[in-house]
Length: 252
Image 1 (tube, rainbow, N blue to C red):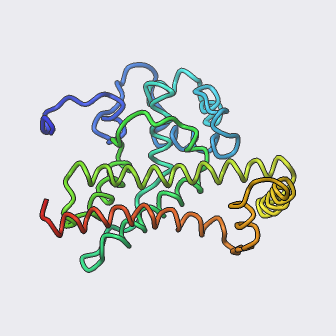
Image 2 (cartoon, rainbow, N blue to C red):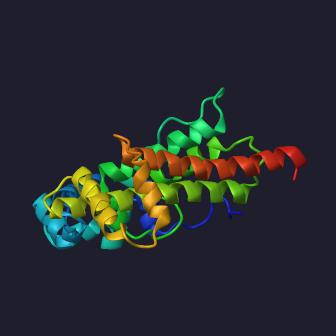
């Protein structure tokens, strides 16, 4: 699967892991890679991802734009490092006496928490498989949650991708809805209430029996958004559990 420890690493990956320093040519450096990344995160948090540029980050640091290239090769590499740093480390790994499902649930919720804490992350395109330090730790803990389940290696990887993808999709959807509510001068709860009232009026005399039944039930929860998250995650894990049970039953 790999060429071992002697494989040549691209410069951006080696830098992320602290395995290679930038060349010492040019003026003496007065910053660190960590400071450059932190400044990028600060700009993204306060002004949005669109405001992040090498010149803007340099201005945040009181440095010349070209000086940043002594620490990070490109803006693309800077964004990757920002995401890895902002995501932070994963939640605690699966305990020896813990089942795979609660461990993977905690892992999934950690993903959602990270994305909600740093909502700009969802606007950074995924540039490849997890390779930076925190990304690899998340991958390790996600795979470890599925140890001993009987799933094959590719199935464990696919499960981790499925769960993290669900978390990213849910974080994006809810953040978009929240931002839309803010633009309209309403709270998300107000938007939801108005939506159902408008839908009820528009469909009252039409051929929408399934919607009529739903509205008539009037089933509302105080934490509707989080309840929807838990419902979706539960159904994803139900599917994984069926596959695990199949592996256990027939030994395939």
